[in-house]
Image (cartoon, rainbow, N blue to C red; front, side, top):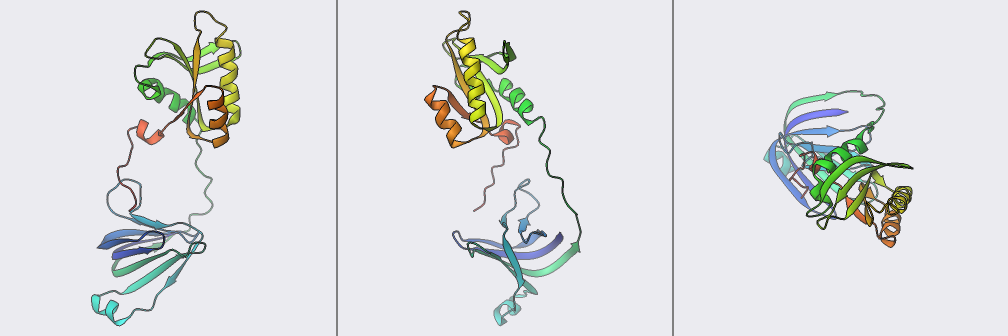
Length: 230
């Protein structure tokens, strides 16, 4: 990875067009050819970027660029869309290259448990007037992630997944069939909650009368970023 701190401007051209005027920024050029442009604010999200597959080339400067004080210009081109990102550098403050090796990737163990904890604390996300009965409500075939009650006092079983797929819907269906046999709970409706719900899983859930709820993990943790690209 190459990390550059520079006085620069950035222009993006393609399906969208954007311009970042001249300012001091951090430029991250990764081994996969991608580039990220960061400022000293805005949390983790770059101001602009080009995702792989892409290639980087150093441009020859024309007279106008040289007259404006540009000392180096790069063009990063996406190989599939031909979108282009051009970085015009006026001054380098730092330029270093580091071999980071092979990254093992992010281990996300515990995310579902944390989502359960967060949703229990923010049960209103399941619907206005919902209240928590308990987490890990035990049934004869396993625990339901959350048992709640809606605004009318009816029971609601909530199954939480990081990625919502068909097997999760089937799991919640089995819980609902069993719980609806209990006269103290019935009628019990279901909510299938996940960070991402696959279209097939949503179709199956809705066909069975199960409501789908997409969870924004960052927002629930209070980490929602108001900055957006373009």
